[in-house]
Image (cartoon, rainbow, N blue to C red; front, side, top):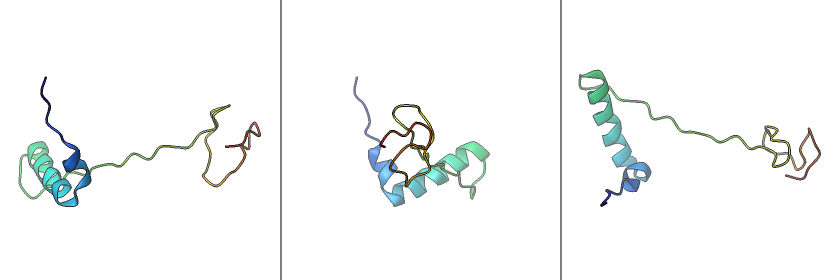
Length: 67
């Protein structure tokens, strides 16, 4: 099965803008509306106890494992 590479649309800012405008037109039915593209931020977790870490810890506050 042949595929179409969409990575350039994810990385290039000009292409992102085009996609936002196209999706806004498709979703709303009118021009001038721009869709909001959410960016997912993964939460860092401890490998042992799966505790959510805030960011700067060297050790897990729950189980004491080095992160």
